[in-house]
Image 1 (cartoon, rainbow, N blue to C red):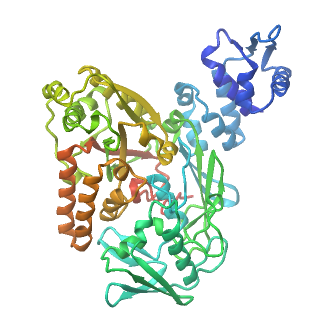
Image 2 (cartoon, rainbow, N blue to C red):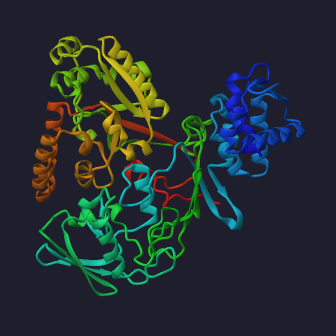
Image 3 (cartoon, rainbow, N blue to C red):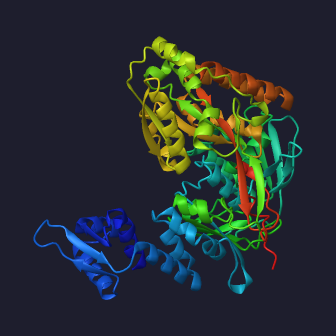
Length: 573
């Protein structure tokens, strides 16, 4: 009942006057997912509990009225205290999903952190609790293209081999040994005694099944990883042979991708019953909570934490009470600073027939995007100005706003609306609003549209967006990530770059795959120069993330896509 009560209070809060509010029963019918008859019954129950007074509307169509006994803030704080006293984390997270004022959460944030954060649970389990402020999208290795979900998959599944970022080499993993004679036929010898989460032993048939699924799924965004594989042979349960259509020096790096994690052949893939061989198994998944549990039969080192609990809450709550504290209450905290392995950008949709296709219009947008001015106006966190995919190749860009008007005239821009899409979270709203205001100074009419990651996957924005604020984050393998940026057809590069540029880039990438590391860097710089010269996207910045956490959480290191390595964290008793 509490969830319905607080859902109602949050919905009515801004309309309340002296603790009273008028409403239509249909409002609660839609929010409580029940009939009008049940709405009246529930309101009567709340009245009997002394929480409110319900005054039905007199006559058909007239508004009803409700008078609350206590202020909403008092009820929120009392309920949170009750949750803390009885260790009711699920109920507390349910409340934190509601759009309650940020200041109220801040008032009890230290107590909430103590309740969530880290815990020694029942049966001496070490449990880490973390907050997420959005829906988890797909966890299917064939489809996932969002960095956080890609990171989660690395805990659930394993690949034949692993990429070592320190030495830039491929290491054995599920396969304890691998070899090739001509670069086209590869033999892998599998470790024995590797178990899936459903306790079936891994064999070569599971490797063949995973490859077949990757190659033949109509919904895969990562088929390119398997396109050179001609056949897979399984001469024994512990031996598998790949035959390639042509030699590909990146082949080992392809199969080291998390998207190529091995799945069981005897179990149809199910996101809610995720079965792999990874260090954690998926114990629970719902719309609002996800639980990972350490897999005791993991073939390598078992995680030191026993469980990871991810709770969905509002953006304000996640910002204030996450275990990676944004505003630590005391000095007894630890901090880690990390330049994100990626960049933020403004994508130009060059598949739509709009003024954005005109080179002068994109030049105007380039000069309008003054990242230093934006950072100053919005008081942004530290960053590095971007002109490249990685900060080591980035240099400050010269911006000349005095050229904007003449460029707009060259483009034939006459004030028509330009649709600008941005992510549905607080900082993205701020950046988009700032850019809209800057555009207005020059007569540019931006119409803003927020979108979610689910919208991103559905691709409806391709037909509507002229511009999109977005970001790209690299995995541990920066060269494979560079390929993926252009080969993954879920990402915006493939969806919105002009076909002429993609053909040119594809030719460059074929050469890229045949070269040594230094020469690959040169080709990457050539491609980035092409992007800059044509303003296919407008580079913004490389974020510097500061993560603050409780000193009891030990061995905090960053893993792929700039996220924490949960498998190494531990809590001393």
